Amino acid sequence: MGEALYEHFEEFVGAYMFLCLGLTLFTGLPVAVALGGIAIIFAYLGVFFEYMDMTYLYGFFPVPREMFILMPRIWGGDGSSGAIQNPVLVAIPCFIFMGTMLERSRVAADLLHILQVVLKRVPGGLALSVTVMGTIMAATTGIIGASVVMMTLLALPTMIDRGYHKPLATGTIAASATLGILIPPSIMLVLMANLLAVSVGNLFIGAILPGLVLSGLYFIYILTVSSIKPSLAPPLPEDAIQLEPTNKSRLTTYFMIVGAIVAAAVVLSNTGLADLFNWPLLAFFGIFATSMIIGRAEGDTLFGAVLKGLVPPVFLIVLVLGSIFAGWATPTEAAGVGAFGSIILALFNRTLTKEVVTEVCHRTALTTAMIFFIFVGATAFSYMFRALYGEDLIIEFIEWLNLGAWPLLIMLMTVIFLLGFFFDFIEITLIILPVFAPIIKALAPEFASHLGVEGAAIQHIQAQTIYWFAILAAVNLQTSFLTPPFGFALFYMKGVAGDSVKMTEIYRGIIPFVILQLIGLAIVINFPQLTLWLPELMLD
Image 1: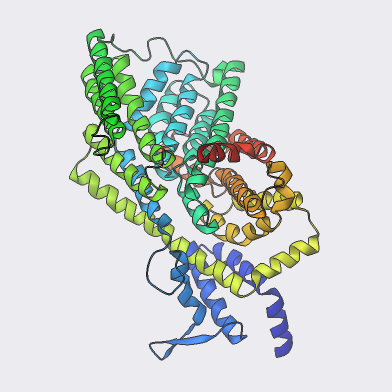
Image 2: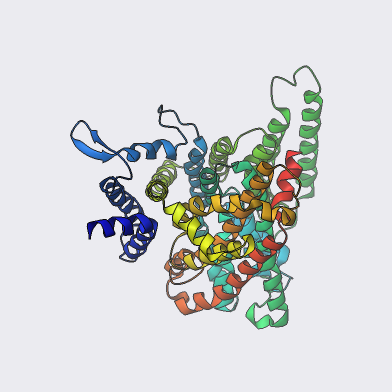
C-alpha cells in the first residue's frame, strides 16, 4: 500500500498541488496564505518522499532546503549574497504611490471637464469623454481600484443625470478604468517582466498599440450605439458647459514665453553649456510651469481649461514613458520619476498637504504589502511545483494531447479567460506564466512565420514569441476585472455608486465590453506586429 501511494504521489504531485489550491481558494482563505501554505505543505511532503533534502534552522528546526532559495528568487539573486540583482519590483510601490497621489489631485476632474467641452456635440459625447479620459489616465497610473473609484465618482452621477442608459454608463466606466492594467505604466507588465525575465521597457512599448486598439474598439462601439439609438446616450445641451471667452493677451503671452523657452533650450544645447544641464528637460519643466500658472490665471476659459485639463496628464506621461523611450531612465527609475511628478501635480493643484501625503503613503504601503504577499506566496507555489516535477507532468500531458502550437495557444488563452471569472489578475499571472511560458518558448519556431521572424536566430524567435505571448495574456486578463462573479472593477463601482445602480445593470453593461476585449485579443493574435513593431522601431 505504501509503495503504491509513493508511486501515485510521484506521478501526480503537480495535479495534487493544483487540486489543493483550487479547493483552498474557494474556502475564502486569503490567496497569499493559500499559495504559500500549500507550497510549504508540499515541500515537507517532498522531503518525506525524498524529492528534496532537509536542513535544520538554528540547528533544530527542520526546513526543506529549497525553502531558502525562495527570497533570492523573488529579488533575482542566486542565493550567494543578499544583493538585489533584479530591482524591477521596486517600480511597483512607486507606481502605486503615483496612482494614489493622482487620485487625490484634480487631474482627472479637469481632464473630464475639457473632454466634455470638446466632445459635447458628438453622439454619446459624455461616454466618449469617459473613454478618452480612461485611456489618458491609464498612461499615468496602473492602479485599477483607484481608477474605477475615481471615474465612478466623477462621471457616473453626471451620466445618470443626463439620462444615459445605466448599463451603457456603467460598462463604459468599468471598461475604460481598467485600461490602466494594459497601457503602460502597468503593474501587471512589471510582474510579467519579472516572471519571464524580459525587458520591462519592451513590454511597456509593446503594450501601447494593443491598449489603443481596445480603447478604439470602445470608442467605435459607443459612437455606433449612440448614433443608432440616441436615447441610450442623450447629447449634452448646448448650455450644459459654458466657458468664458479666452483672454487673447494671455494667449499671446503664453506662446511668446513657450517660444522663448524652446529657443533658449536649442541655443544652450549647442553651446559649451550643453554638458552642464539637460536643457530639453529643463525646457519641458519650464513649459509645464508656465502652462499651469497661466491656466490658473485664465480661470474658466477654454484656453485655461485646456492648460489645466490636458497639460498635467501629458506632463506625467512624458515624464514616465518619455524618460524610458528616450533612454534617460530605466523603467524602475522612471517609476520614481512618476511618483515625483505626481507630487509636483498635487503641489500645482494645491492639494499637497500633510494629511494627503500621510494618507497616500499609508494606502501605498497597504497595497504594496498585499501585492507582495501574494507574490511571495505564488513564487513559493510555482517553485515547489517545479521542484516536485509538476512542470514535467504538464509537458507530458500536453504531449499526450498531441496539440500543435496554435491549438495549445488557443487552449491557454481560453484557460486564462475562464480563470478570470474566479481569480484576480495577480494570481493568474503568478501561477500561469511561470508554468506555461517555457512551453510556449519551446514551441516558438512554429510561430516564427506568423511573427515574421522566420530565418532569424532561435534566441530572437523565442524572445519575440515570449513578448507576444505576454501581451496576449495581458489583453486577455483585462476581462478578469469585468467578468462575474468576482470582477473586482464591478464591486469597486457598486461600492461607490450605492443604490443609484443595480448590480444586474452593471453586469448587463459589461457584456458588450467583454466581447470587445475578446475581439481585441483576436486582433492582436492575428496581427502580432501590433505588439512587435513599435519595440523594434524604437530599438532601431
